[in-house]
Length: 605
Image (cartoon, rainbow, N blue to C red; front, side, top):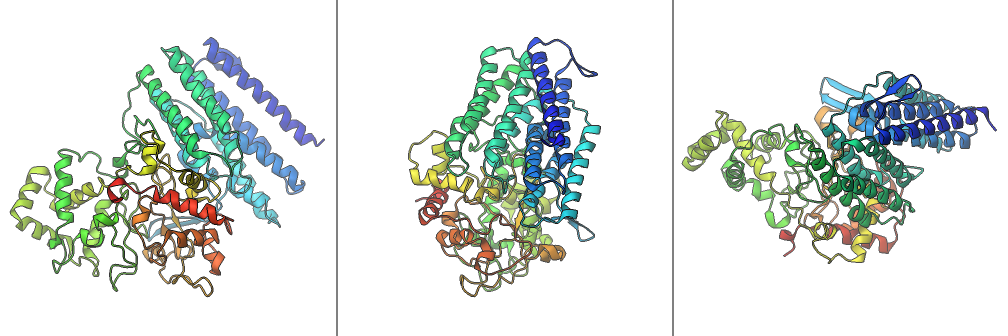
């Protein structure tokens, strides 16, 4: 046997002994010595576990060599990845940026702060290594550099480890990982080739169990402790499944939601006080509950909630008023029609528009706005519409003057807002109304939350395909089913799909709209567009940024072929994960059935 393998196995055995010691410490609640570290606090116990797993990860990465047989390198990679997954809940909580970098997809990284600050970086980390190991021919220099860079970043993390967690940090850590498992962990999001998502989710859940055990003394109620442990153990058991046949619908219903409720009881038992709300509500009780994702997390104006209901009503009036446009012939509601889930049912609104009118439902849950992501807030989006020559074509100062000339509107501005910023206050009112267009009242929501029992087997199968084999959820993340990545919701993704100019699949050419490129002229961002929500998609035809497809069946066929690449459109930076999906006709029909189950009740009649 290779001596390197013996060394790594010996280290793995040592790590297991360390973990056993940690569990003993948590049960006895007495200081124990691990090497030269005295374990006498929960922070120290978590840090010892974290460091030991980091060491195992680094040791296996450093054993990878271009001189090894590829199968041997794959085994080292799998071992390193398992150690990395073991620290995922902790690393993602204490260092979000490094976790994101180490776990990033094998896609060129482009950061555009402004036109003078554009950074383009080659990706590194585990997903990149995984894909390289499975290429027909490996670029040995690039491969060696990628492994080295990944290992060095982990060594830097180890050298700078200093874990200090208050009780609310621990609850956030546990909740985030429960949500992460359900939204990205079981979808194949970060295991693009090996398809080890379910096994890796078992590993991360085992870490949660160890953390809960370390904090056993914090529990006043033994049943609350036992219920939380049992819910996590049940999840591990249910994750023991084949990727393509895994029942994600019932996993979320019977595990994720049960774990979230058990965590709520835990924070009550600990009497945890939270300093503020994160993206996931501090009182989240199920993945698809209307209050689970905090809508105010996506705005810089979180404190502007005094008399919010009245501001929302004022915004609704402005939304429907055509005085906001130059010729007084267009309101927000002209293009965003309520009965069509706030779209207009047209390929483009008129000949002057290049892009399809997107739904405003659930649009509040994003970090960027417009299809090219050029606005950073709903308030900023209003400015974009106002000043667009082909839309309102009226500067904000002129809109302010018109609103102030209306006695009713002036009175509302004066009474609802203390600040003397009518420009911003008008925009805030409209944005506040848009932030109410998130019902979470679809057939799917009511069924997965146990309020109804009307969902069909075909719709359940469609959800499981969406979250698994069809890879839809690797871009359209639940529970919002848009491109804002849970559980931290820091990034709203943009993608290059290779959308054609027409529905022709024989002589297809890419849509001439350059998308994100037009914002900063970044060459590597040509034809990139923001990932929209799939919620209410039944009511928002036609589809894609240019309205090229009239039916959901056409959309599914496009993805099943592999996007633009599958119809002859070659783009270097296309971001779809597979050449084609290999979906049967019945599976495509199930996908469509599921997507239609995401229609909110107010749009179904």
